[in-house]
Amino acid sequence: MGDLLILSNKSSGEDWATTLPLDSLTTFEKVERYGKAKANNKVVVEYLAELLDRDEFALGMVNPLIEKIYLRMDKCASWLTFREYTEHKKVTLRQANFCSKHLLCQACAIRRGAQILQSYMPKIEHVMQSEKLTPWLITFTVKNGECLGERFKHLECSMKSILANRKNVLAGSYGYAPTELSKVSGGVFAFEVPKSKDGEEWHPHLHMLALCTTKPEVGHVDPKTGKGFGLRKEWFDITGDSFQVDVRRQEGQEVINMACEVMKYAVKFSQQEPADTWKAFQTLNRKRLLRSFGCLYGVQVPDSMLDAPLSGPYIDRMFTYVGGGHYSAVSVCDMRDHYEAATS
Ligand SMILES: [Zn+2]
Image 1: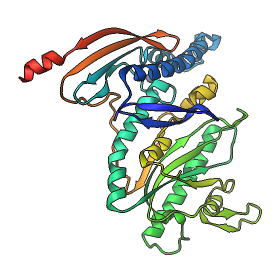
Image 2 (image 1 turned 90 degrees about the vertical axis):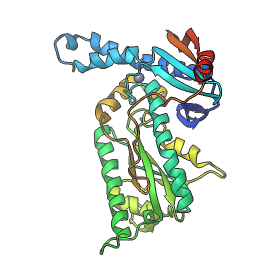
Image 3 (image 1 turned 90 degrees about the horizontal axis):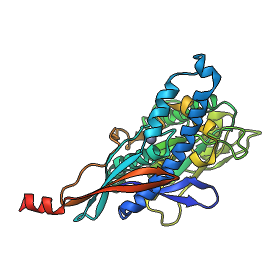
Image 4 (image 1 turned 135 degrees about the vertical axis):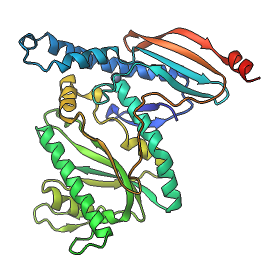
């Protein structure tokens, strides 16, 4: 499994995209996608340069870490080496210089999403088959607000509460109200922190891939009286300000495509101002934006940003970024004959 293909969604743009893993992408298709991501990286880099140019930086009032991040992001993905395994017919990313700031940098966000998907899919497919579970996508939202930190904490704490209730109900503990989440054997969920449509407020929410014994009932609630049933009622009781819960699955949708929807970017790079991307990074850096529970708990995501090597003859192609969202091929190293000579 390699990089992620970003499919544009006409109604909401590139970053609200569904990400699909495609082994069949050619080297040049992959390079094209990194070109678009690198162009977006440059928008944020230019914003950081503006911050560094401001007078207050000379007076020491801006965190000097900005300069460090600026330098790393500026160099990020400036060169890439892809390895084409001719027998496997697979292209892997063999070497690159990444900044690893996946909340700021779209190139790193692509890589991070691919790593997460690659790590989770074997476990997801295994437990679905062995425990006869059905996947559903569940979205939990809290009311928009101006303070991202406060809204994120509200969403995070509310999620912890509903999951703690599930755990207690499943454990048979006394005094806990039944929950629709007891139908979920395990799940993986990711926080997303876009701005609202008018760009005035933050719209934090989370998407969960839930592996279920039966479909959780979304239900409804009357926010005036608090009366209702199902997940919307449970969520309203916990959050006090939101009953926005959605449970869905498209007809015939493969579980890997559902996982891609969960594991896409946490921020919408191309749809928000770089100042907002920077704000989200400052608020959420070092927070765990992807979490799991139940039968999906404990999956390890490797730190390496590169693909694992395969065996067999290969061709290495190196590219450097030349600006404007484009890379240029700078070297080709055909090792097919060397490999065959060494193994014959
Ligand atoms: Zn990067």
